[in-house]
Length: 256
Image 1 (cartoon, rainbow, N blue to C red):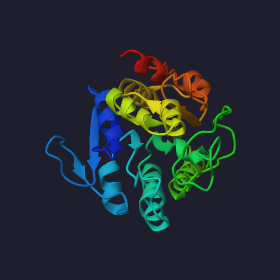
Image 2 (image 1 turned 180 degrees about the vertical axis):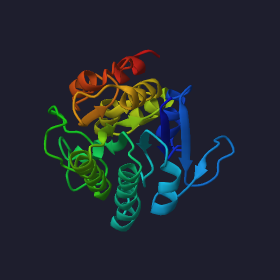
Image 3 (image 1 turned 90 degrees about the horizontal axis):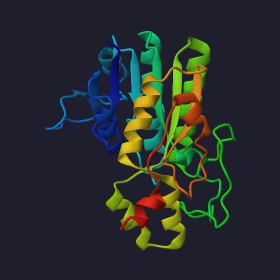
Image 4 (image 1 turned 90 degrees about the vertical axis):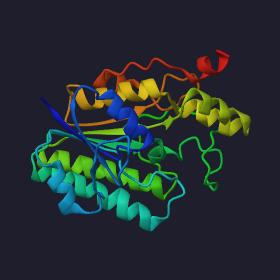
């Protein structure tokens, strides 16, 4: 049976990933102890301890990061960049087959940004499609750290033969949380409708990223629901990973 390690397992995406992989041999890795998760406790900035935990696994889903678009440079370097390099180094050392790297829509967040000077990402009135092979345009130091993580993945895939899925995750929200985002500005409300990733679609795309037979060694793919307002193309995600999103922000909001 395939052994799968999940860093950042206590986070929102991490918990959906654990649910998606129920029935598989999974090792959750968390930064601290949690009563509801039987995990290995490890900081990804500690390479030796991390390497010891990852030994014997076949796949790593790397979610651990400072997730804030407001994060300062030092914290993104220490956790998001150095921590990601530690994961890939351990994958190389232990002949791990695949790393699923949790990238972000913020790696391309400056596309369609209403005001590049603002830290809060909102969408222009006439958004244009963004494809995974378009040049990166990060909107923050957090976005820069995710672009760097994608580059690390490409390097380790090319140099060491590791399969890598760079998954640019949208905005994971429950239906109630999605509705709450519609009470602000029209631009912010549209951004949430464009980027929404429902819990069910999150589980589906994470499962696909772990289990799909890849057409090439490195895949960069967007992960949102099939929202009417989306501008991140899902074509690569559908073709390469077999992802079939079921939910749509607009339909969900219209359902009540």
